Amino acid sequence: MDSKIKRIGVLTSGGDAPGMNAAIRAVVRSSIYYNCEVVGVIRGYAGLINKQFMGMQSHSVSKIISQGGTILKSSRCPEFRQPDVRKQCVDNMEEAGIDALIVIGGDGSFRGANELFKEFDFPVVGIPGTIDNDIYGTDYTIGFDTAINTAVSAIDKLRDTADSHNLVFFVEVMGRDAGFIALNTAIATGAEAVLLPEVPTNLKSLCDYLLNERRKNKTSGIVIVAEGDKEGGAVEIAAKVKRRLPDYETRVTTLGHIQRGGSPSCNDRVLASVLGHGAVRALLDGRSGVMIGMVHNEIAYTSFDMACSRHSEINKSWYDVSHILSL
Ligand code: ADP
Ligand code: F6P
Image (cartoon, rainbow, N blue to C red):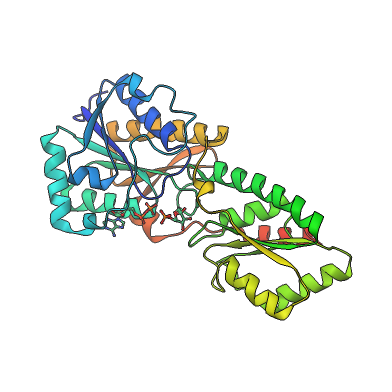
């Protein structure tokens, strides 16, 4: 393979996601396999600014495939939005002999990567890593599978208490702009209702539904609330329902960041490994300004422009399925 790229930088940016380490491992090992050096950038774009670079060898990524979080650490870095700061980053990479960059993160991170590509023609490829699964150009993002499994096991436990005490639980799951986590966990746990950013929430219908459930002798319930629901988070929704149904005993649980942590699932490890290898190949084959994804089990490339301007959509018919199956 004849490429001018001899040293590849890799960073993780935005919210961490289980499987990011597996992706780093794949980038490092694949680069070495194709006779390139690898430089790890610490704390995402902040590390490009501060020249926090670390040479990586094969042993640097030993045994990390099973670890959550990211050994390179991550950050949100508002300074990177300034063009002069990005110019400094490119200068820093050139000084360190970094010829190309792999960015593992969400759509915000790809917006930053796209600027490097467009402003400086710097070779960059993105790998989708976020638990939210909301990135256009891939069926699944790294971390989503682990996050939904974490949420499902937590909600199964809440169900025991809901049943034992005749409670209605409002469980908030992550998903700032998208309801993938909420919808999948609702189906998998047999939740009585699910509230998503993509579907307008009608509190009257929800309360009518809960009343009807009680008439059918269902004494407890689980309502999954996506963090980004327009009607409010789980605390707010539970309070509004309680005002309409004062006899109902309700509880609220916010699953929060436990969804972001933990050992990645098999699916996330495999996805991260295949995409990590594919990202190195893509750079060496001359691709840049693209995100690598998996569509119908095949590698797919999507320009950063598209990946950042579009959104992956939930399957609305699955919403109906979740409702039908909770009757
Ligand atoms: P995620 O990648 O998980 O969506 P963020 O939206 O926080 O997370 O984005 C991660 C980082 O990407 C930001 O902290 C910032 O450094 C960079 N970034 C986001 N949007 C832009 C932008 N429009 N221009 C340049 N950099 C950006
Ligand atoms: O993007 C992933 C995510 O977990 C969202 O679901 C959530 O809204 C956000 O990150 C929270 O991020 P942080 O705690 O880093 O502000």
